[in-house]
Image (cartoon, rainbow, N blue to C red; front, top):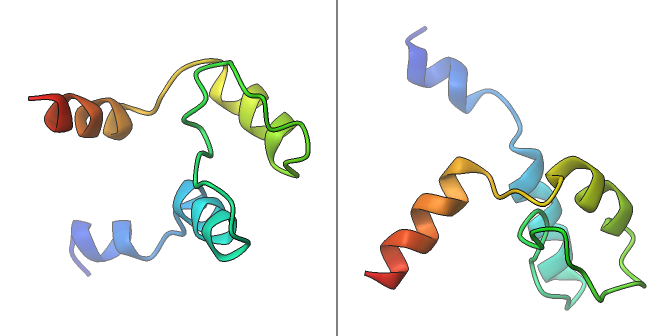
Length: 69
């Protein structure tokens, strides 16, 4: 089993939560809030804000930088 196979065998929690958010008709904003969130009815809100601690994941930063170029 190569390194890529091992990486693909793990569940990406962020993408899972965002997928659930989309399926519920909500914006897929999990861990994108940067510490500010007005969606007080979101079931993921507390975990998101505590886990994210106001910071985006490295992959999200790269994605945003690429879109802005």
